[in-house]
Figure 1 (cartoon, rainbow, N blue to C red):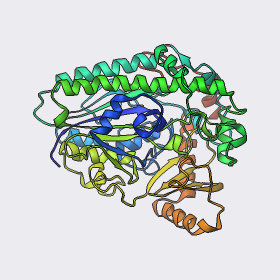
Figure 2 (cartoon, rainbow, N blue to C red; figure 1 turned 90 degrees about the horizontal axis):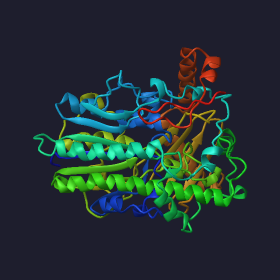
Figure 3 (cartoon, helix red, strand yellow; figure 1 turned 180 degrees about the vertical axis):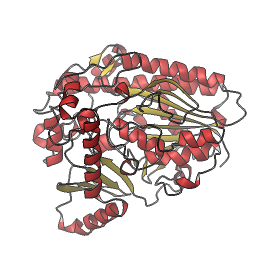
Figure 4 (cartoon, helix red, strand yellow; figure 1 turned 60 degrees about the vertical axis):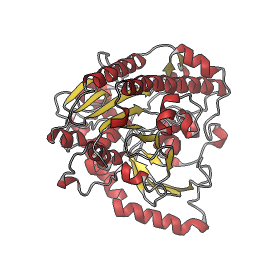
Length: 481
């Protein structure tokens, strides 16, 4: 593979139902065209379905339990080398624009330059989420009921990010050496607000409702039940309320696509399309009321599956790759794409180059996702191979889904005698990667230590919580507990 410029575009909370090239309902022509001229990865997953830890995982190429950035109070601080560090060390221009959700400008995260970054609040993040046993309920109902058309600081921020992306490409059009740019948007992350014209567009349509949205159909599992209670999702929202939220969310997806389209149009106008590989993905998905949950947090595909598209020189065109992939695969992919050398210390990382994976579109492979964050009392782990998804919960029953015959995960096979051997095999595969109970204990111990460092539980409760990390220049709106 020849060295090439690499544009990595990341969004936040973009479910695959929010892209028409994945069979979703959102109008996303620019991302669709990117998929048409490249490869769409159909079995791609986040390594943790919440923002801060998966962004640290993506940066370092390490599983969450290995890097030990557990939740939204453990932002990436540059202590573990990132792919940005590796490129900069070898003299490549490696810049970022937009949301990082790292620890803040006082730490070196490895970029040559960061433009308008969004970091965690106060460089600390959400320490309240470290209270795993008796954390206060996070009341999310109002944010769901307020969904609609309008303006928000997130929409304004993403317009600026697109502006910066257009300007950056113009400034680097004649660079002699391949560059890497991470362009990171915050949409369609809540608040569930989109431009009025997009809200009106979707509000007029009969949008499909997510799986198991009715309370009578909610899966009865103790971990999922706890999420619904913890985030105040019980009882079920009324159907018109959910439909309003869907219109706002899909409108934000179309708005995001517009901003990405502005950048890809500039790439083409500057004559850089043939010398630039483009990767698009998101940090995790969004439930949209599926299983009675809004947001992320779970291992169901609405939350844990992500879009992943790659296009450019040497990338198969109009292709679909079903080999399982995850966000840790971006680390070796970007390093290889720009023509950098792999570091000896990275030999044991779990990621594999997307360029190699794309040439083996139906290979057997296993990927991992895990969750140790807000709303969970104990760890959750997901193993996904070419057919099955196995969810392992510390202290709660496992789940098993046949993703070929049951892609909506409606039929849990964990109790099926016909699948007992599959269940045992997948648990063994998980335990070859990690010790579920030991990792859970380590996470809880690190979180307890973080709480003590903040002055103890009383001080953490007094600091309170906030719904969304503010855009640059905006203050966090704390809620006391």
